[in-house]
Every structure is written in C-alpha cells, then in structure tokens.
Image 1: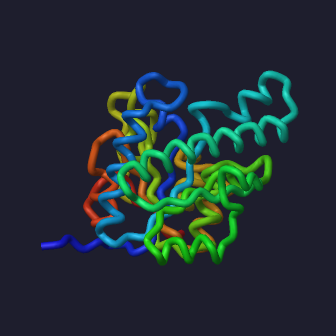
Image 2: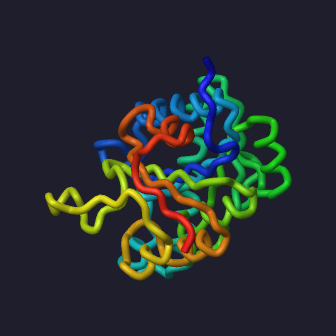
Length: 241
C-alpha cells in the first residue's frame, strides 16, 4: 500500500556543511548520492520539492569579513558557492532520473534559470525538483532567510531543515554538553527570545509572520527526509507564536 505524505509542497533547507560529510570541506559525492536518493523517495510519494542550499562547505561571507574583505563582496562569493552546490545536487538527482531545475537569484543563463516565482511553481506542479541557488540575490541575507522567503512565495506547507549530525533543537550544543535538553516542539518566539541557534532572527520572523512551520532534523540518518514528510515524530517542530 502506498504511503500518504502529510505535506504536498515542501522546502528542504540543506546546509553546505551537510554536503561536505566527514571531510568538512568541499562536496562529498557519497553525500550527494544519499541526499538525492532521499529526495527521490519523497518525489515518488507525490510531494512537490523545492530545495535551498547553503555554502558553508565552500565559503562563508562571515569568514571573508573576518579576513578584512568587504561584507557585500564576501556575501556574493557565498552566493556563487551555493550555485556550485546546487549544480552538484542537480547532477545527483538527474542520475536517478529525477527531473530537476536550478533557479538562481543571480542571473547566469548558461548554468541555471533565473528565479521566477511563477515558473518555479509551474515546475513544482509538474513534479520537478526546483533548487533555489544564490540566496536571495542580496548581501546581508542568509540562506535560512532564503528558505523562509521562498517557502512563503511558493506557498510551501513546511520547511524541512536538515542538519548535519544534530537531530533537533537543543538548549545547548549536544556535542559539547552531554545533558543538553532536546526540544520536541517550540514556537518562533521561543527561538527569538532564548537565542536558540536554529535560524537567524530575520528568517525566524519571516516564518512566524507567514505561519510557516519548521521541522529541524538530522540529514545523516538515511530515510529521515521521507519520515519527515510522512509526519513521523522526528526532530523538533517549530511553529506559530
């Protein structure tokens, strides 16, 4: 019997670090393959999937600023790095015969479509995976904010925030503090008031204002993306006020 998904349209937020695997830098082909297989699983359930990728495995705007680089320039470099990650993920998906489109907020017609909201929605309706690259196209905004913005624009029902080696939201870093408390449910106000490092304040406010729930879970366990869209109790759910 075919399983029924809880959500019809989702935004999957992948950190750049998740694509690097244990190496910590660059793109691990095995990780790309694993994530592509997991995305294919939910596409086969009939879920419309949009993906937002980060760039921390290649470049961070913050790092550039710490080096004395102009912040805007450093952020644009990070946006270009997200395009590299998006193309790698597109390649992994298309090897599995999953139709995929990369849409970039910075125009580069030779490698990606420009981001056009109505075109993105049409791709999703045709069950193509859409990967949003180059952030919002503006410096000073994170890819978390991009995920929140695109989710609002395409009317996604949830943001699936796939973390690397962390299976939810804790009150402290569980890799450092052994008795750190894991939350099963939070509000966006809790995140803002307690300064929990789930997503930046701009992204949290955008999700809260548009009533977009957020599910934080680990990407390192195969099958977790499918569990998330089936509504299984994994990770931490963040919603409302």
